[in-house]
Image 1 (spheres, rainbow, N blue to C red):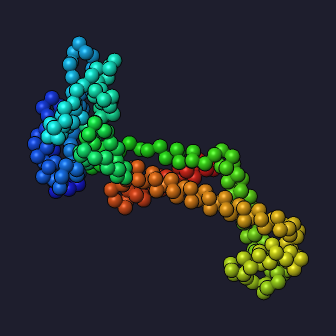
Image 2 (image 1 turned 90 degrees about the vertical axis):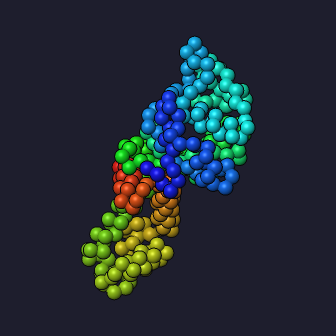
Image 3 (image 1 turned 135 degrees about the vertical axis):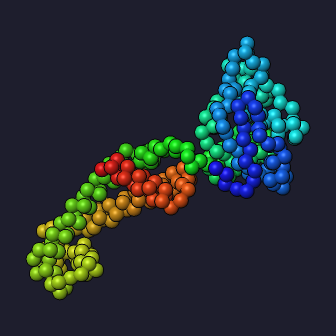
Length: 279
């Protein structure tokens, strides 16, 4: 699926390109660096081959490099190093492009290295070759391993976060029960019926001046250490939330979505899997 108005160039195994690739590249930008959409109709030939069968590497990657190298006046010499073809300066033409026929790529070719988000590059002497994966509408999208997000934090920190969240959950449950019962209504320093904001005020009074609230010493010990524990637990919760958010942003950069519906699906999947793993 093309993402621009530029002509789509197809590479067909054993037939080459359907259009003048270099001409399309030169007409699509000012200079020799830019973006072009290239589609693949079949699997390119592996660049790793036996010396007895072939005297040079073949495939999409090789065809592109040869065409651009010719226009730039660069001479490429391939050397068979064991079972891999390499350039004379040691850059390996590896097997990374063996499955590129399952995707559509944005290609950029130039003689200077350009770093762009979500793009990889292969440096062939003075030629820069990098691409950005764009999933086609009818191509199955592999599901990323979202569970790897939880590995960012250490095991000890995860144990502390889980323990703190469990304790906070029990504490909140106890506060709700107290608010619903008669203890808080009768012994609170404010009016018997209270809204959420007033409950926070009562909790603050209990943390700082427990002697003014008769129920607080019996419930929480009424010590400053108890208040410090609550603040510490909240900091852990915020640390977990911010770390998770940053990882979700990174995951979306590595596997971009096409529309808001896909974004909601992916976000729900990530949140659910991490919540299950968190529990």
